[in-house]
Length: 159
Ligand code: HEM
Image (tube, rainbow, N blue to C red; front, side):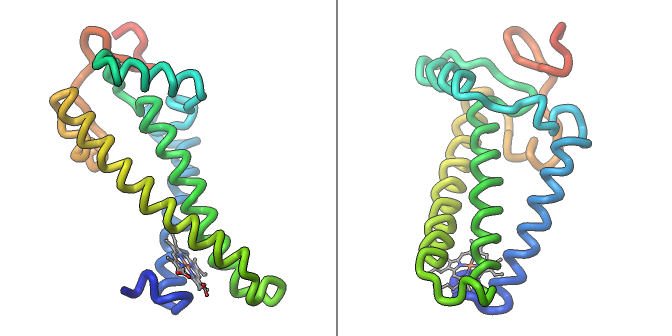
């Protein structure tokens, strides 16, 4: 497959396109719509542990923005994808030519992305069932059902 056809032009340019998309998403995290901004959902270990504890008890709240698990996943994906692209690019520099640690780091990050992507899909499916809404479609449209009851909406705390 072209993606694993090590270091070939299509592999490299796919990586650069992915890196550009990630950079655009990072910029959007500062200037974008309210729920897309990092300050709306930036995760902390405490928020993540609380959310996961509630999830395993079947009592987690529904978030209109990103919930702490989804937010942590997003940060992990941003770091691993950016790191994978940078280590891929570094392999072409004279300075690092043939460095095994770089190849191994690149491969490790590529495998981490696969694992994170699998977990991300699983999380989206579980949450869609738990809250009776199509979260995958919400990722495309940017819309979710209006908040009600104990739902969390940082942008409209009164709702
Ligand atoms: C998200 C983006 C990327 C992914 C998922 C990815 C994934 C991979 C994988 C799975 C391998 C094979 C590792 C192995 O079995 O040895 C590889 C090798 C390689 N990649 Fe990437 N890559 C990405 C981006 C890039 C970029 C942007 C570049 C360069 C500009 C690049 C350059 C290379 C090179 C030179 C190798 C060969 C390393 C070796 O000899 O082992 N990659 N990449």
